[in-house]
Amino acid sequence: MHSVTPPSTATSEAELQAFADAFGEFMRATRRARGRYAAEQPPDGDALGGLTLSQYQLLDTLLDAAGPLTVRDVAIGAGVASPTATRSLTALEREGLVARERPQTGDQRCVLIHLTDEGRARVEAKRERVAQWRRDVFESLTPSERGQAARLLNQLAAAVEQL
Image (cartoon, rainbow, N blue to C red; front, top):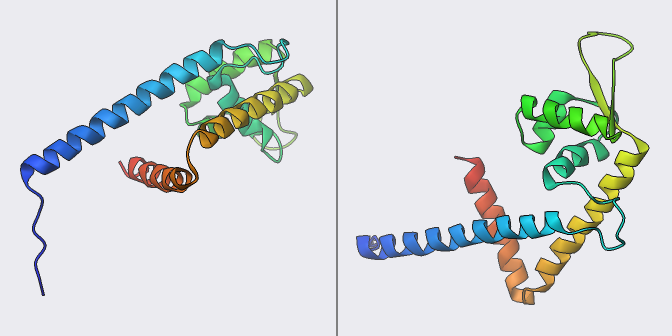
């Protein structure tokens, strides 16, 4: 049996710093790209895809749902707090993108949210723009980098979820 020698403190500190620097730069680049992306008009010039990324994340949850969702379910799907979802959904309702309804049976205090036809069209348009952005990022990598990136992103996501 042979023992594994732990890395020197200097090496592990240097590696940690390199990781922290790279992670920070990735996060900054992501925020800058989100800002640029949010400021862009849809390619065809109309307002179909014109949702903020926060609005898109809320509405995208509704697009895939089998039926109307509670505000709590929308919030969980979008990864935000229920009060945040409530405020955003109220604004989206004023814009005609979602509608609220009371269930036919059960707790009448419960409110269900569903997309309107216009809301559905705008989320679908935004989803396509997001998919194109992901394709562009994917295509900017070499074939060997693509597999590495997918594996590392999954590992980072799992590590963050465990925090």
